[in-house]
Image (cartoon, rainbow, N blue to C red; front, top):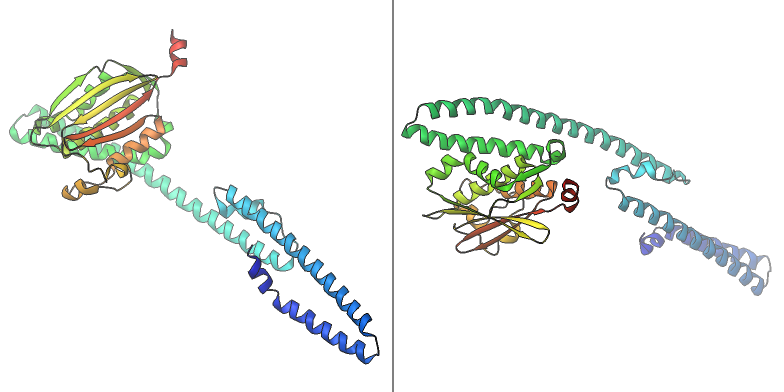
Amino acid sequence: MNKKLYWKNRQAFLLTNFVCMLALTLFLMICGNTVSSIALILILWGFILAIGMGSTYWKRKRQMQVLLTMADQLSERYLISEIMEPPERAEDQVYYRLIKMAGKSMLEQTGIVRRERIEYKEYIEQWIHEIKTPITAMKLLCENHRSEFTKEFLTELEKTNHFTEQALYYARSDYAEKDYSVREICLSDVIHQSIADNKYLLLRNKVKVKISNADHTVFSDDKWVRFILNQLIVNAVKYRTEQPELDFHVRRQGDQVMLDVADNGIGIPACDLPRIFEKGFTGQNGRTTQNSTGIGLYLCKRLCDKIGIGISADSRKAGTSLCLTFRINHFVHEVQN
């Protein structure tokens, strides 16, 4: 509570007391009272006034501080009226009722927005599942009628499937735990599956793929890890050089298994590196690539945080390296052994 403003708001009350004290002094002097008795009365009045106003100030300050502390501890501060005690003062009760009305209105609006978000996400998920059927059908038709045209068409179908998967995982990223199944997976299998998902994209762009030391097992969700690898593969192809290479290397360090995905592309400028996982950030490379959205790496980071995988990036002029870090659960290994 602002001390200066508090006393400024009480200037009228203090002025009224001063006028009353002056009038009482004149009245007592007319009545023939001595100066010492009048001074004693005024000193007593001033003392009582100071004690009363000081105690009122400290009481109000303590009440306001309690309210501010409770508000700071709330994640949804519009619910403050639900936990604060009803005030005793008449004017404070009016503000209390206004806060209750505002909180109720906010709860109603929040409920409406949440229902609309849930309905929209359900619609998006249903639409994506429906659109996958014609995509799969077109892919089968192209594979059964191979030609130069169908090869180009299959590459575009892979891109379409990639964008639909990205939209689906973005919609589900808020509640990843509902679609998360932890089991022991071999990183080599997941890497090969991701390469198969993007085989036409890799073949068309003549990307040389290298896999080394990948026979490590970790506990995670293979579907989510596979999606993250798909994002990294697409980025590597998007920012490729004339002779693109993609290297998957797995190493163990202490109680961690690290999967490095390195390319020899155009790299990421040092000034952009700290922000590449921010939503919508495209950086200098994104300005030269028209189809960059700044969603891919943001979604990778968000999913990694949800499922307990560390992700970091390192870039040089000769390419970029993304590292996925899986923690080894010693307790699980002990139980299995």
